[in-house]
Length: 185
Length: 451
Image 1 (cartoon, rainbow over the protein chains, first blue to last red):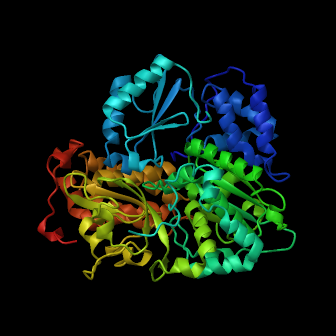
Image 2: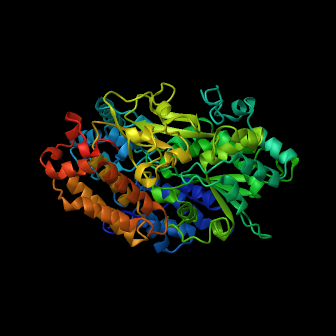
């Protein structure tokens, strides 16, 4: 199966979803940026807002809320959400660790970094720790090849990583215990 | 020491803000274009400069602009491709992060030439923090009157919006980018029609890379002829190269097109040579270009010094040359395994295939599977020919160039490093250790001793 079409889940997360007031205002502002009749262009930015307001992933309820706000058919939202790899279609941990695994990072030790993180967290790439704190993802090139190996957590890039630095980061995140999103300012 | 056109002021204090940028001569090209030049005259300067698209394809920018259809009453758009996802490439991020106003300035000047009232920066979702930097810079420029209605009293209106993606390499392909910008899956469109005729919202659109648009600033300031004095032949001006892999000094370098490959990889001004060990191979232009053995990177098949130009890097064709690509440069030392790297490349393309065309969707998956078993000690002799066969059946048979980009790294790896693939079949136990060549570098057999 091509990685570009990923199944959405209907069994997890039946929690209802509605945008916060600020989120809704952001959706409206995003839709107003485009020429008349072209507000569908705001779909990807709005999915980012929805994901940030739904514990870091897109449930069917969250996607349906996006469809309603934008006046789109549900399928128009599902087919886009399932195409882009930054949209999580299953529940994720408080922190999603996107570790770059592509060739330039591999040349500088990303295989060792991923193996170490798997061992330290006791999970495989693609899984979430039992305490719900960390999701580990192997991702493709993040444009940080000169400062490899690296990982992204929320909006932030953690670069020039060593095993020691990665350990310190995990400890620091665990102690902070607050969700990070790609949209964080 | 090359001349710096984009990076001239990059280390000046406050250059990220409008005030600091302006204090170092920023927005002069907008003043010059809007006050003293016609749109046609700006296009003429860009044509004279010989500037070629810096995103990877190297198509002449002036020519691309001249294809833009101009039907009455139909809006035209400039879309800046900041999707930067080609493995090895991080130059646009570096530029936007440190000197965001040069992109905005280039967009205003370019949009004036193209007659575009609105332009978009499509930036990959992973660069969210860079999108924030751009948004802030745009707000500054708008507040100071560089964007908005009747800029500098010229009657020209312009505004810029930042659009974030959400993780898809394919959206760096210009028609996939436009689909994504319209809020759809990033499936490339069949061309023709080209975006210059039917692009964003079915309107005439120019899609250019970040670096290309930034280069319009020095071209308009100093004139196209002055820009064309730098470089050799059809490779004019400067180019940003993002360098990584097993080198001493990774980073982004602005080079004069035409420096020798030897100087680029070995001098302390740029890569600074190999990081310990010995060089083995080079990918000079992002993962999609052919990988070449180190010796063949330094010298052309005719034995001449190879240069960092579009022409010289491709000398020898696909059998003996490579490509400039996006300038995503990475070098391998002799601890690295070419089969492992090729498997890694192919996993990337399989993951990033949009799934529209079956040769790419299925072929990248088969290649990944075959390479995985070779690298993990389960390969068979016939796998090497099978791989060759699959990549040949992908190349040229897809809507967009992702198929070719997936085929070329495999073809070039087999062409230049076939003995290493054979070793993986004959030494299946040894290659099960992922660091097999780190402990004992692979020695080329006599048959492959000279590239």
